[in-house]
Image (cartoon, rainbow, N blue to C red; front, side, top):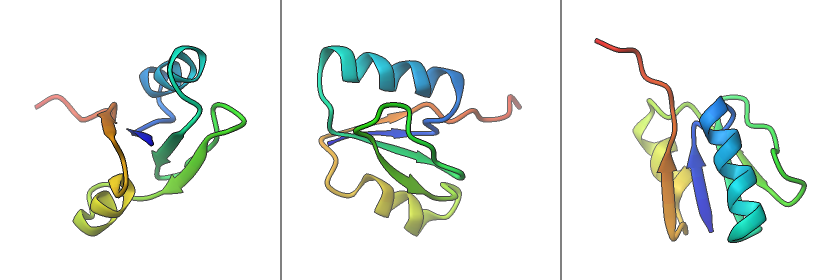
Length: 73
């Protein structure tokens, strides 16, 4: 399982498409309002600022990609 945190942003969506094309169909999309990018995606809606939800989101993942947009400080 490849998990993309912040998957429904521009970078996350492109990563999901590229992973599906060239690597795996086992992709978990994680976002507050998660939506599939590929037809085989697993979706997981979560507020990643909540520690327990973030841990649950990556459970069972071989790789987790962090593509969540954070404010520049």
